[in-house]
Amino acid sequence: MKDNTIVVIPCGARKLTQPAQAQSMYTGSYHRMCQRYARSLTTPDNIYILSAKYGLLKMTDMIEPYSLTLGQPGCVTPLHIKQQAVELEISDRPCIAVGGKKYTDLCRHVWRDCVTPLQGKGGNGRQMQWMKAQL
Image 1 (cartoon, rainbow, N blue to C red):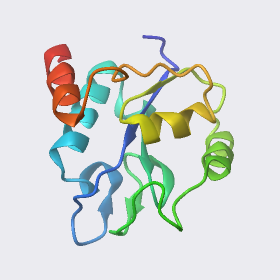
Image 2 (image 1 turned 180 degrees about the horizontal axis):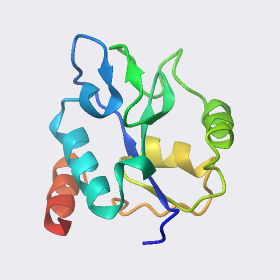
Image 3 (image 1 turned 60 degrees about the vertical axis):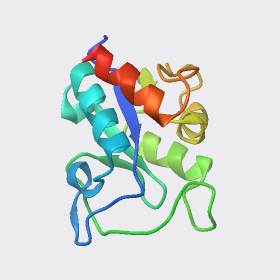
Image 4 (image 1 turned 90 degrees about the vertical axis):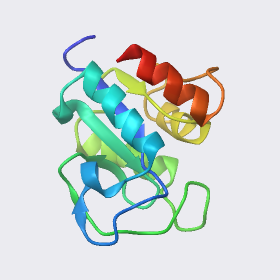
């Protein structure tokens, strides 16, 4: 993988109940597996979590717990994600988008040519099996 490639992973519904770093906030098994897979591809500095509330998060960003999923009123928009990517200076970098269709579709608004390794792998269970096999 190229050194400047970023990996974007989804947030998760299961969360801690107190403020925490983004890398620790999401406690569900799907998010945890996506994070493990992303860490096998690159360093934590190049991993971003795509949060329905906050948008693109660095692993060490401190956030509050929330209850919001992509598609609900009040969640981040493609324009918001694009603006964040520009501010973070990652909009021109190669991207690997790990996650389900809602998340990868959102990533494609910023990174038109992003690689989506889980596409066509089935539901979350099959995706988790595939990621585990790659580790």
